[in-house]
Amino acid sequence: MSVVTRFAPSPTGYLHIGSARTALFNWLFSRHHGGKFLLRIEDTDRARSTPDAVRAILDGLSWLELNWDDEVVYQFSRIERHAAVAHELLAKGRAYKCFATPQELEAMRQEARAAGRSMRYDGRWRDRDPSEAPAGAPYVIRLRAPTEGATTVTDLVQGEITVDNVQLDDMVLLRSDGTPTYMHSVVVDDRDMAITHVIRGDDHLTNTFRQKQLYEACGWPAPTFAHIPLIHGPDGAKLSKRHGALGVEAYRDMGYLPEALRNYLLRLGWAHGDEEIIPTERAVAWFDLDAVGRSPARFDIAKLQNLNGHYIRERRDAELTRLVAPALEAALEAPLTAPQLGRLEGAMPGLKARAKTLVELVESAKFYVASRPLPIDPKAAALLTSGGRATLRQLAPQLLALADWSAPALEAAVRSFVAAQQLKLGDAAQPLRAALTGSLVSPPIFEVMAVLGRDETLARLADQGGD
Image (cartoon, rainbow, N blue to C red; front, side):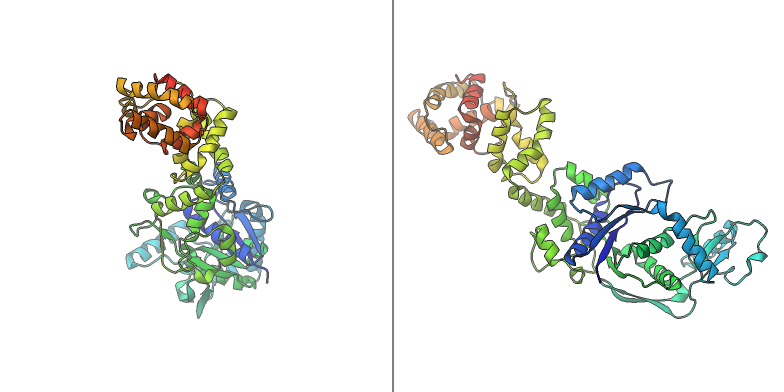
């Protein structure tokens, strides 16, 4: 059997981080088994579904590089097919017309609430003739669910679970306006798309028993189910915005790499021994559902940052330069010149060793491409007093005379200078840092000088009175 999985989000908002993990697990499972990963947009809720939300989902999946197979299926376009199946069940006696009024249903809800139980439709129209209803009365179509025995779901994560059928009521298939319900549409779509495995959050588990009854009523084999635990915050509470439950695009904008987010989401509820760094190729080779745990995973932003730092260090310098250049150009309000791009790429080995996000990388790289005269922050300016400037004026000719502009040669020259002047290294290195970076924090100053190059270094020193 060829594996076919699907990701079926509702376009009512951004691509939530928990939904992104569900998409990842479906994608990995299908790729591991050489199958297909399909995308279905469940847009039947026309009041809440928006084109912007659809775009956010497609953009989020594309940025995560979770490429889907075949064309996107839009559920709303298939409502005639959903209705046709419901009417087929009605004709076969596997469904029936229910004329219960809103007032009657509200009375059932109040009775259930008073008894401390969930609302269940009492089946009052299950065996009645529709002719008993007033002429023209609105009705819904309900599944004629079994009332005896039990429904069992063998779940690849949760194990075998059985629910007595008496606990399940006759769910609505078509509303009174003829539109299909979510529960009905999902089953029909999964059948028509030949889905073999439904991998979704365990908050859908209660739906599965009713949906399995619908499969049986239609005479269709049910797919294999796998309900994965939800993601919780570090405090064990349900994941919310205060924990980092943002849209995927927010993590992109915060400077996370897609491969880092994939790796992190993979480890939320799935494990392969003690492995933490799992590149995508290895994840595809290793992933299967038997390693998914039953307990909720806990979201930890610090772990995500550490993983992201690893993947930043793994990226090629030219790729990182391409990724951060647009943000730097926006800050400068001008395109980067060839010399600026050259300095940026030359600085990447030192910059990426210290950055955990692309945003941090952009911030730490700004001084390399800043226009002259360089802006100096107040703490750095305090070092460029008359004494600091005097030291730079004395040092500049010796730097100008250097034939070798490498970091070791620069360090040797500055050390020779401070020894001759009976100064400490910091007496020269700190004013140098202030003048060349505009800050007291930077990569090693001799590395900075080597990356800036002779001309830019000497010009920045001259700007601060070091000529």
